[in-house]
Length: 288
Ligand SMILES: [Fe+2]
Ligand SMILES: [Fe+2]
Image (tube, rainbow, N blue to C red; front, side, top):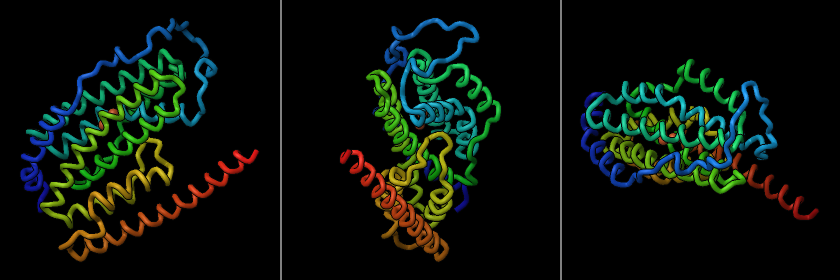
């Protein structure tokens, strides 16, 4: 099926999912979530003191990467607009951009007042990131749908995990609020991908094969096999997209299906080893 015909056939689904999204999405205000009373003035050239907000380095780097991904949204918008075109798709892409902008606002304001990151380093990194303007550019609509579905899910997980590791309530609430939005984005793209699957399962399985094996989300901090396997590959790729039981695939898509399943089981084994190692370490700590 050619790209234009696919997108045209999906248009009513996109319009329906957009309506659903607008009905579900709650209005919220970044300025009402930021603990402003913890803020203060900064002197030019002031040196950042990490002790002002003590938190492990991994949490700082997750916050840093998550925010830079949100900042990079003009380029995601560009990719989405290019691949999907206008109409209901365009309406979705503009709304989505506005929501992602809200994420960048609330996280940056929170970081500025909590001083969990060095604001100078962060601003320089934002300049660099946006000046480079690099985003993944999947080659066709099916690959793009699969990619953004994986990406929104990974982003949801990453924001949520990061929020849980913050030591203050407002920080947790900011990240949980953003994660709730990412969940709606995920459901939108998953719904579109489901509809494409109904139209042409082989095309979507080929896209899943390419995207799942290549998937490395810049900025989500999901480099953990356990998270990746238990919260993305198994529930979404295997169960939701029914990878094991799909019928009527072309020979090429059949091979792709086998490759994805093999990939999932490899990641699953790595996850199992990591889980066992963590359990052993936890027991050692308990025994002390
Ligand atoms: Fe976001
Ligand atoms: Fe999102």
